[in-house]
Length: 183
Figure (tube, helix red, strand yellow):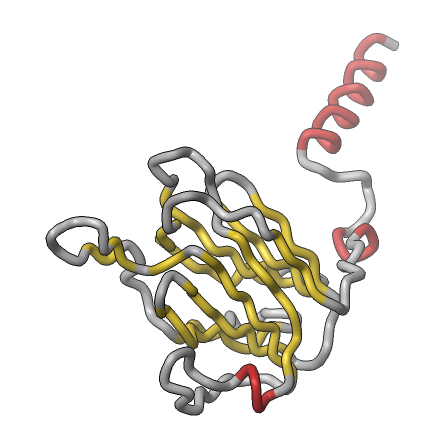
């Protein structure tokens, strides 16, 4: 009796610790609901510096993560606005207005302010993001097709997420990351 009880308790603890409930992940997946825009107007006093971007596919959502170097004043991530824009507004480079090609049929524009990919505060420019300006989505991505940097001008950093159609999304932020979850 004690062995059976211990086994059952162990299984419950294991499933709870792993985030499991005995159901498949697709059965428990709750996609985001937002189809409009998400805005955080809190701006740090210093320009936040991007260090990494990543696309992580899930069973029913994709996550696009932007990582930032902690600011000297500890204020964390930059202000942001995330919204779908029509192609004529989304697919242009900030500053120059040059056309930008992005795979997908809908364009979720992620604008950070104040933010940059290089530290301009010293005598020399120091790049904090050295990755590509164009990131292909993994083959197993649910909705995201491509991520493209379309601007890094006057402390405004802009990325376009190419999506296979208008899909709901959520935005979460922590002290060093902004994550856009697309359903």
